[in-house]
Length: 419
Image: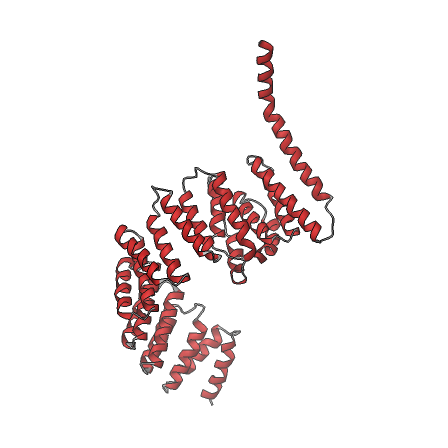
């Protein structure tokens, strides 16, 4: 009896050591296989590289606490690139970047430059920026870090990215079934489906987030997102309106209410129901205030005024918008440039046109639109017979932006005015 107990105790003590030895041996096996991997690239070697990468993925899942997981993931990403599986490489690199934020970016950036080819062309810059962005300092669990990788993926689309991205979300729920923010990750998974054009899967995912997490604070958000898909992607006005109405009825006073009114206004505007659009834009503005989310409501209201030929109201609303979002150069300048366009094209008011441009330049004299604003103002002064002001504005443009293509045009105009 004593001998049996002793043997069982010895086995229990040795098991972790044996397991560690197995883990190390497993990784050494993959290293050896990689070192002997053929240099040729053909169908057979691509398939073999994919199989080895998948094997490393299994090894890492079996040994999550091993410090060697970082090296395994790096090898895995390289193998996926050898296999021309750029999407799997991109997903692996995002996970690696978040799980091990101290990893040398000199190793990762060149790999990502190849892997990003799996992302839709117009999203590749965004993917690169998400990848290189500074990661949050401080204590975070592995689940929190990996969830942030999935959040980045939820913003991206691409034929080669969709399958590996979906697998990464599903694997996350298997690895972390008790993660306290899984309801949020479910919503991100819905966003990922939507970004990649699988709208019905996105709707199902949003429903899952609301129905399977009874205490989630995102019930209103999930319902609003379903409405957005019906409105924007499936062009089903009736279903969109039903979803939005449910948010207003069942979640009155929630943070989603203002957004819903804005989206209902956009839906009305697109269906040329302009009276309803104005009512809903006003409700959205009342609830959203001066938050960044309100900007679209103000601009939408101005658009409706312009579409109904109430150009004076459109002009005034755009100036109100610019004043409200004055600290945001992009929003402020865009609003004043649109006001200038309405003043010139529809109101035929050269003074209001000039004033709009002057306000835009005064608010952001060194912004990215400054050179264009200076040139347009120079022309406006010239057309009004204010040659002295035109000369000053052209000179200002030439001095401040000597390499801008508008500078040479300003010099030509300046030469004519100074003859």
